[in-house]
Length: 511
Image (cartoon, rainbow, N blue to C red; front, side, top):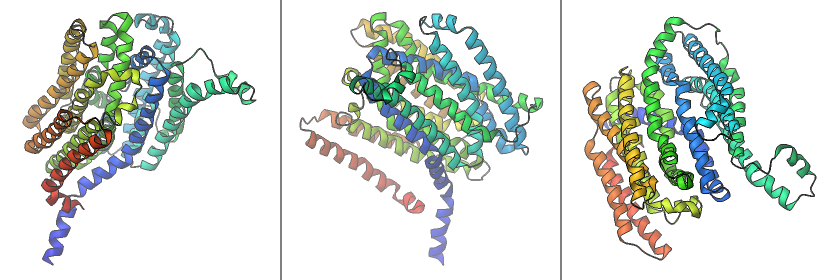
């Protein structure tokens, strides 16, 4: 009886960890697969388009990321918070949606009227159509945010995944159709009957335009598929609830704006701080090398999808903070492993992901990998100000990060260029310092307002081991690929074995 009791108790204790892992898999799978398949387009982009053309793509999506934060203004997180604690969930949904619909329509009207001045202001005067396409894309995506959040809150994982997958496959399918298939058909099989149809939908003078068009069509289809989620929505907003939602969400808006400055503004600054003849090419190289952090980005994105609703639900439990600390341990193990795998097999596998013309930025990849690791830890830590309703701290932390990003980029991009380095080297180190600072500050301030006993020794230990093993791998170079891969695999096994030995008592409770 004693043995049975000791076996069952730890299993129950670890259930929240299993639940989070399951939710990360369920809600993260569409995101992971979507990002992964989307990343599979990068080899095509970096082989079909020039460095400058791919740089233009990065610049426009950087603007889009910033505007998307403004258009959703923290309402998704506010919806989760109030949906969890309010009895009338329909009222919460209706109020949040009416707010987003109103703001999206106003944005779309303004963007349509001032499309040409906007295009001129961002120095793309000949591409007014880009502004219009992105305005529609952003408005459609903003109107999809709360319906997707509602699916997650209602645990309708299957429908959530199906809609995400449809959007993903439309985007990827249209990219391949327009960028590869249509030119191939017109060049090699112009006598086929199908090429007559191709002429109706394809313009040979367009290139990156089809990247934008594909995303716009996918956004439209996604919103159409989410129409059933609007069921039960009332056409009048509750004014009191709207004030509460906005009061909670607005600090998150500023945090999100500052966060996007940290994540994407370096591409925009590279374009404007470097000489015009090299700026967009360097943006293209920087953006392509940033994509090498695919595994880190995919995991963090999947984790964020599952963690936010999970943490809000778990907050009701007595042992919530202990669970948060345990989750952090496993998060650190995972991101440290991802860093090590990527860096050990970079030259033999991951670097081939991008075209040869973009690989000159290889040296910034470990810096960007660690920067994204810090960002993932920051997301994990940031739950303290959301749970304690002190979202203003999220705004302050992101604002501090934004200041660091802007100051260091303005300083280091020209400095790097003046010292015969690529300007994006300065951007990479600015990103590293920005996210590292945000992570440390969030931990220190969070321990005062919402103390959680995180195991700092494990954080330093696991991350330190992964970095040391990477440094060993680059200090002992082997020209023969088979020997190099075998040696790097041995180093990877050292890390995994260390984790298994240290975590064996906990792992036995989970499994």
